[in-house]
Image (cartoon, rainbow, N blue to C red; front, top):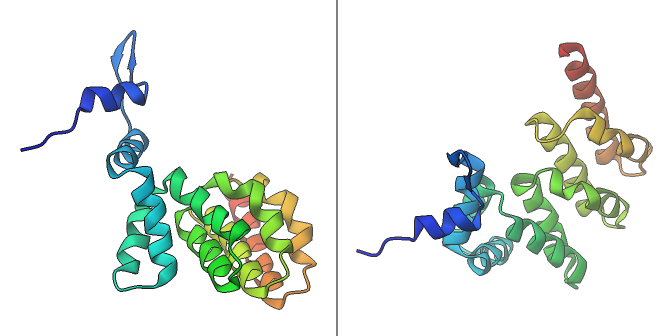
Length: 172
């Protein structure tokens, strides 16, 4: 039976310190990314975008792990693909697999001249805020842009984001 070199993986994640070893669920996700391999996770993005049978399983695995390699692959597809459908699907996938690492790309997505990309983008903001992956302050830089956007769906979701921010502010 083949076993993984857990010590080597733990060392690569810098989990050993003066007080011994520490590990978290985030470290476990990073270890799984190492075990599965960056190329396989980037390939899972490509597979999801192809909508072949099994693509939903690939999406769910990516959603669970939120691997950097997959997040960056989505952005590569958005920036490099000639297919508008691939661009939309890559941004759509980010709605499920991303975290605050996508914030630097939000303005680029929301200003892209395709309603599908714009719709997915504003849904990313809404989703990240709703699941507490970002704070209301993280959204503030985008509020004027989405509240005054020409796209009806973007403005509709912007109202939902405004309501959620007010609710979260009341809780605190």
